[in-house]
Image (cartoon, rainbow, N blue to C red; front, side, top):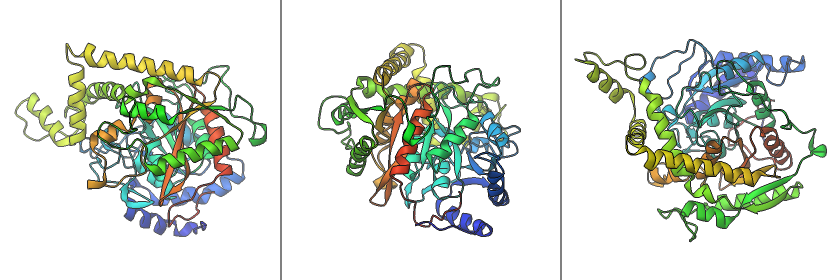
Amino acid sequence: MTRTVCKDGFSAYLRAWEARIGSFLEIDEEAVSKAARSHGSAGASGGGPLAGLPFGVKDNVAVAGMRLSCGSRMLDGFVSPYSATAVARLVAAGAAPVGKTNMDEFGMGSSTDTSAYGRTNNPWDVSRVAGGSSGGSAAAVAAGLVPFALGSDTGGSVRQPASFCGVVGLKPTNGAVSRFGLVAYASSLETIGVLADSAARARAVFEAMRGADPLDQTSRDRPDGVPGARAGTGERAGARIIGVLSPEAAARALAGSPGDGASGDGTPLLEPEVAAAFEEAKERMRSLGYRLEELELPSLAYASAAYYTIALAEASANLARFDGVRYGRRPAGAPNPEALVEGARAAGFGDEVRLRILLGTFALRAGFQDRYYLRAQRARAGIRRDFERALAGRDAVLMPVYPTRAFGRGAEAPSPFAQKAADLFTCCANLAGLPALAFPTGVSGGLPVGVQLVGAAFGEDALLDAAEEYGEAYPTGRPDGYEEYWT
């Protein structure tokens, strides 16, 4: 049972949580309190669902007058002179950006432990990770510090931390939300996403952000003929058919061949608690009137390899701009331009970023593009075709988000290779350019568990309808210490 905390006492509430989880890199406490005080009157006077609401912004999305470090020493001290289109549209809807949330450096990681400014802890268990790379945004929402926050999703960076922290995470269709103001990691894969305390809140945020933007030529309005939100729980139309990856198909995907349901390094395919929650979610969807049909996604076995090849190749090109000349830290006393660039990158980039840039550069070398990059693009096309077939006549595909719940650190953490291999359930939506929505299904062993729905292009409303219906019928809990603050 949650309790309502007095608005005047919110600063103490925020500081207590931040001391434990470290979700924000910069926050204006007065702006949070001011937004909270105005929210009730703004909402009551017809100001819209976002009027007066404060929100956090991942530190790779520009907000005028706030830091824009991407969790990296390379951009330490940089303040953005402009706001991303997504942020500007939320401000126009009455919401107020109040701070920048922590993230894995340049979005590269699954834990928010690679940030140059300290790690973010999971509100459910501070010894565990919040997920990544949008872990700061997920943790802030889970702790009740803001009702929603923006993240970015390149291969699951919104959905995985949403599942780890027990909140809703929406990755829109590629192009549905303008990327202007998002610092590029892998341009063809990433999009600005939403982490929110409910599916209804995520819908309101997405509606405010979506649509074509003249500052981003890859952005588009929803095409004619794509249905919008349905009328209500008792009046929902549509196929009401959901495809679901069979346990055998999932085992083959991660193992790479028919086998014992284990990955190549012996990591179990699904943690028992995750497998049980997935089966329970399937039964609950049936109880809500959905028909579930098992399906195969043969190309899923290649998803992680294709994703990392493409993402790292694009990252090596995108991050080339950070050279200490135009952007980034400039070392003192460099004797020549080569030494300046080398010194800037050695001091500014962390180990994970340097590794990914080197791997991406290798994949793009002359003689290697056909062997790696072009083969990855062919696998990407195969994944897109598989999902087109899977979604024909169906509302969505139901999948796990990640093979485990929030993992620990040190010896308890999966190996770096295992963490990357585990992205196969999330990165496929980015490769195919499709919308995906992670939402909590319950709590097991003191940690939240979630599932995700992947839909047809510009079919976000169908996913939000299903998640909202699920949340109304099967509400989930909050971490200890959470107090009801946002209404």
